Structures are given as structure tokens and as C-alpha cells.
Image (cartoon, rainbow, N blue to C red):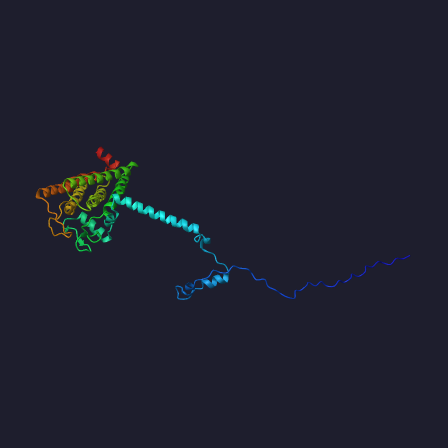
Length: 342
């Protein structure tokens, strides 16, 4: 018996699948926060090129508006903190000004730093070459009321004392002394402090001596202390010139020798002559009753002679001692050893 081959029946064809197609299309709007309102003045104000600003349209188009610093500046707590900090700073500054003015007149001190480049150059030349300068009297100007007078600032009067040159010369002297000691091989760590201490002591002792002399001679002046401090610092100009020139010529021998003494004597005489002429209006006021301030400074002849002697003693004797102390420079170890061997 023969069995016929089994044939698979052909697969049945299923109908194609159709996805449902919506008949009514609806769009869901995107929910976004509205932009902040733009002031009318900002919309109408032109920019730096003359065209109206487009900031509001750009922000509206982007749809997002961020406050600066994340809205921190608009926080009431932050604003209260800023206000308290501002109040504390103002109170601290007022407290410092009130307590500082008890010991130092800041407004008067600013007068001594009112300088210019031309004044500094002319004043340095005057301090070192005072021989032919005329006149030495300070210039005054009447106040708006037309009665009281006041001295012109250093910027407008070369005879007016300043504190810019003395302060800069004082600092330069300290640094220059240590630098020259290092070049000679005589530097040690304590030299900087020792030089600064010596210079401070000389200035303080000089000011105390001047105040004592003005007190004993009954000399009064509105800005006497600040004037004396300023004039006491001009000697550092001659000291600096002496150190530089003597060190350059002597080649490590310090300020000793014939050349060093010649330079020192010239700087000393120039400074003494400058002080003798400049301090005359402080120690020997004008005897004329027709001054700018309308005050009469008539003094007795004997008292005027004592003031003249005090001025001469301070300008020559005292300044010679102080300038000699400040200009002493030791020779380098190599030069000193050669001198001893010879």
C-alpha cells in the first residue's frame, strides 16, 4: 500500500492590521509662566547707539525671566542685612574720626600733603641750595569774610612746609643705610631695626626739645607742632646725599675721610641755613601790626634776642649733632682689614 506524501496546506493570509487614525486633532498648549512686565520708560529708552532696546521682546520670546543672583538681592532679609552692615560701617567710621581728631587734626594734616611734582622738585633744590633764595616769608590769603588770613598750601607756596618730602626721605634713609651696609658686607638682620629705631629716637627727641624751647620762650602758633615736625625731617635730604656721594667716592670706606667730611659739612650748612631762614616766622613772628590776620605780634627786645639765640642753637648745634649721628657709616670689613694691615 503506497502512502502519498503529506503536503502542508498553504498558510492562510490574515488581513492587514490598521491602526486607528484620530479624526479630530487637538493640540495641548504648553504651560509657561508669563514674562515680567517691562516698564514703559525702558521700552521707549534708546540704547547707546540710538536704537530702542529689544530686551523685552527677547525675554518674551524666550519665555523665561530670571532675577539677578537668583532673586537674592530682592530678598527682604538680605536687604535688611545690607542696611545693618552699612549702618555699622558708618558708625565705626564716625567713631574713629571723633577719637582720632582728639589727638590729631586730620584736616590740618591733609594741608601738608597737598603737593605737586613741580613743588617737590623745587623744594629739594631749595633745601640743598638755599643760598640765593628770596623771599623766605610764607604767602597768605584772605578768607571769604575778608578778615582772617590763612597760609597757602605747599602746592601754591614753595616756602610752605610739607610732610611728603620728610616722610619719603625718612623711609629712604632707613632703606638706603641697610642697602649700603649690605654692599659693604656689613649687613646683619638687626641693622634695619636698629637704624629705624635710631632715626625715630632722633626725630622724637628733636621734637620734644623744640616744644620745650617754644614753651619756655612763650611761642604760640596754630600749627606749630606740625610745622616743627615737617622742618625736622628736611635734614634727611642732606643725609641721603651725603651717604650716596661719600659711598660712591670712598668706595666702601663709609662717610669718613676728607671727601666724606666735606660733603657732610656742605649738607649740614645748607640744612642749617634753610632752617634758620624758614623757622623765622615761627620763632620770630612779624612785628608789624598790619598782618594778613590783623593781629599784632609785638615782642620785647630781650625776648626776641633769646628766641634768636634758640633758633641759632637749634639750626647749627643741634642739627650738627643729629646729622653726624645719622650719617655714621662703618667701613667694609675688607677695607678695614687692609687699613689695619698697612
